[in-house]
Length: 517
Image (tube, helix red, strand yellow):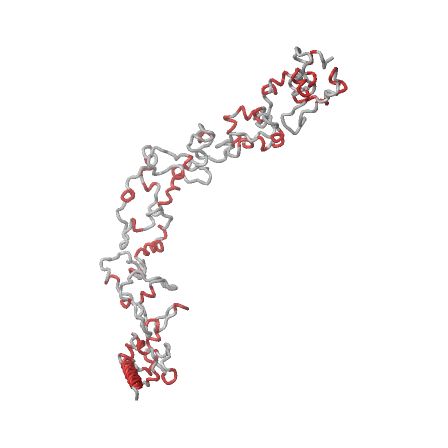
């Protein structure tokens, strides 16, 4: 054998030795399964399942054999379910712990764990949340459940005596027929605060809407003997500043307005003394809406109107463009039903008289806006009704009140008020005045000044008016309100250019070349 062959042979022999050693080690580490069970029937998961709590209790404690639960010859080690539990635990199976439906359903394997890597569940682990009709376990969650519960017994609940733990609670509240003692008010697994809700179930006479901090009976009553204590209103609420307490003695005693078991009805107590006051203040019929019973100042009899009506004004004297108090128009206890038109006449008699003769202007709100009483419109929107007139008004005539008195609608100024220079022109004496050629606005009247020839027919014009080249009136008459242009510069600049040096001493051509008879 060659050296190379010997080295290969030694290497193969060493590999075989290593493989054999590994196989021996694996055989020593691998569990062989339960006694009497052929190895080929033991699943690889046996090593994990055998350490579970259920298997340790049954097989490890020699209480059962594998064959007692598993049909090994037929099914091997398949999960046998809970049917086999009845073979040994008939009583417990008959009085089991039954959960809800679906995902909440329970059986033996819910609490007794046979799977690997899992610990037995605790009662609180499932009952920390509400389950169907059963509330969540909150109170007594750290107490051993078996103190009151017998899982596989009937009855399943044997409540312990509460005083065995709560000996300081010697209640006198349960001294009546059919009492369940502490359970009259307390539920075993609900917080003690839930007992406060139970008061009204028996004491319905005292049940009423309560203001803040009066919703608990314990504010005045001791919980376990329920005898009313000596706590008074002032003891909790302190001395209160009361409305008009210096002049109305009846306001000094709390119970005159606040009933002990219905203190929230104090707002309705005002009418017992003030029957003659009929409040018609919108939907706010309660007196305390305006009259603060315990405000900071007892001499302030009513709140400011603008404390509620914030959109009206910034203060009670700033409405209607300021300077008018709310009481000037509104009566405090009969705030509604106010006629704005009637109120306007009281202060604006002159204006309301003028609009009586101006058709369509009778309602103040038609021009001064819907909020005329509290915020009248500063600029009268004439165009809202007189759109045709406003759109057709020429430049400078858009502001209606420049010519019209706003309430009567009459034209107060004349054209000469603004157009004084034009009133002295050549057309000042025309019959019909300015309206012959102009209109202040539509839709009536002439839309634009008529042509000169409308009144001045060319055939009737004297002297040089009929000469060729003078047919266009605008050549000499630049404006109908100004005299014609007959100076040398006007005549010779564009038309009579060849006459610029003619009679240079003459300043006006019309001195010789006449246009009149």
